[in-house]
Length: 138
Image (cartoon, rainbow, N blue to C red; front, side, top):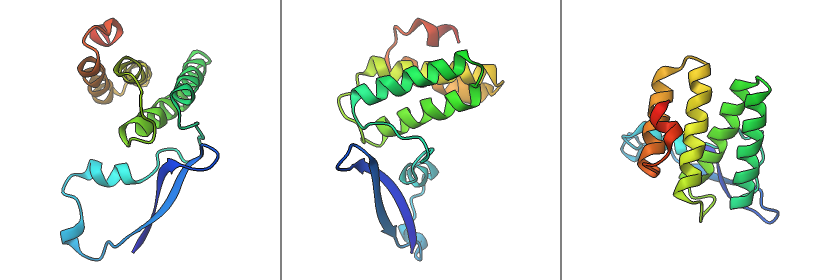
């Protein structure tokens, strides 16, 4: 068995719970690695309220970090937001906001010269909002 921390809203808006997963049988393992990755909390040291307002505030924090030159750290904040949305920890996030999270992280990836990740995020941003001009030109 392996301990897995997954995020679910707690009493104070904290997104954590412990789940034990039996990893002894290879038949139980997902064939898609992204499914396995989604079980593990992204950047557990970053705490974001599991609300739309919490996601907005965390996006703003990522933007500030980026503008201060802390590009890697901004990627972690955008990634945590995206993970919370993708794993349904936060509901009612508009596709426009989700698109912005991806395009902001894409710009950070461009600054870090991580081209494939930037392209993946721009593609995701445009799938969520085809009118996201920043994603089109990044």
